[in-house]
Image 1 (cartoon, protein in one colour):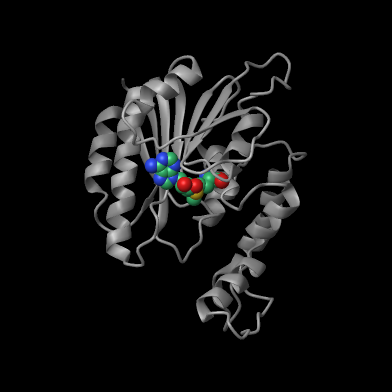
Image 2 (cartoon, rainbow, N blue to C red; image 1 turned 90 degrees about the horizontal axis):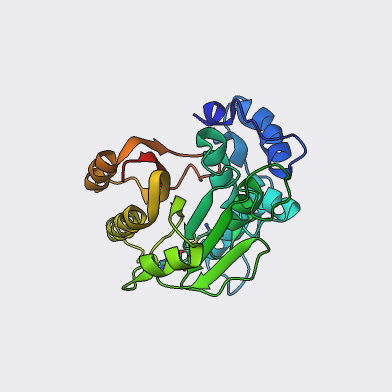
Length: 264
Ligand SMILES: C[S@@+](CC[C@H](N)C(=O)[O-])C[C@H]1O[C@@H](n2cnc3c(N)ncnc32)[C@H](O)[C@@H]1O
């Protein structure tokens, strides 16, 4: 799956993201050696000593961050977070961030997905001869401004949020994407139900604001309660795919739905 999703990437080799993805390709293609974790990309090299006052879970988090090639690449490429590579990889496969597209990013903080969307839809008009798109992000939190993106602090669950977003956008959207996660309760099943509820709410939001033919991309957690969501999406879109992009950690139950061809 990892190799599949990386194959046939079409971005120009000058873009930082494609340099990264091509480099990764040779790494992920390597067979795990005997006794290794088998996780290819994630073989640990930096060990973090347990420090007084630091909880073991924080030490594990720090060690994972230090050894995560996507964290390192994000730093090098100037992305606000490793999440940027998830939307980048999804777009490489499904091509929804096209010049001229009007994009709504629900739960956009700190702004990694926005950073990917702005050049791809030509929101700054830097690619002459190509249609100029729009990128609009909303989040509960304040987000550092980003050239080419319009960002608002908003709970998308608020009454009238859909109308408000269309007003800001000046019409319907071609893409609604969501990387939203509810605050973790520490209880797997509760978290799963919460994220499915959030995803369903995002889907209904998309039904209100998407133009015909539009695309909906959203993060879900695999865990058994997503059947209703799939059924709902299949009624309203011509195609619904479930994908785990390479940048999504293999030890997380996170996956993404990509629903294309909104029927209206
Ligand atoms: C994982 S982060 C998104 C990361 C982002 N895709 C990026 O690349 O930077 C999830 C975000 O969803 C936001 N969020 C959760 N519930 C929300 C809601 N009801 N309305 C708006 N934003 C929400 C959180 O505040 C959080 O910033």
